[in-house]
Image (cartoon, rainbow, N blue to C red; front, side, top):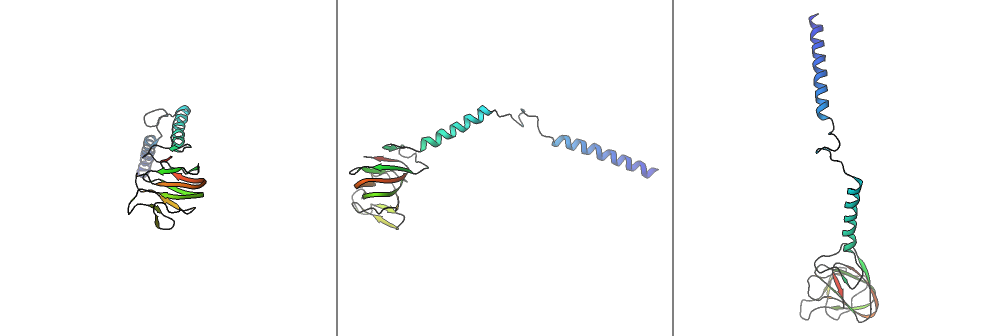
Length: 161
């Protein structure tokens, strides 16, 4: 009979410990600091803010966006003959159609880095179509369209003059 008493006491203790530990692991009340309630209008507001930021980075026009702010998307610009697309540090360009020459400051060491060919295109030299160009600094580098209109894919800040 003594053994039976220890078994009952052990089972009762196990039930009590199990109940206490389950209560401690229970999820927090909805709406409390541990589990705040988020309303649909709040989620929609955050979603709209994110969409506005994304839309603000892509552009269409002669200036996109302000120098230094960059853009995450490629923009396709139609550039008329005689116009020049000037980029800023980090701007990427790809000439899709038309003919263009490199527009760079005068002097040795200046040019448009052609990442596709692994070369440097110096001032006045033809820019090959479908080559990925990366502008290294803010010094009036870009593409001058000599036969157009030309379509240029651009990622980053630029101005069409």
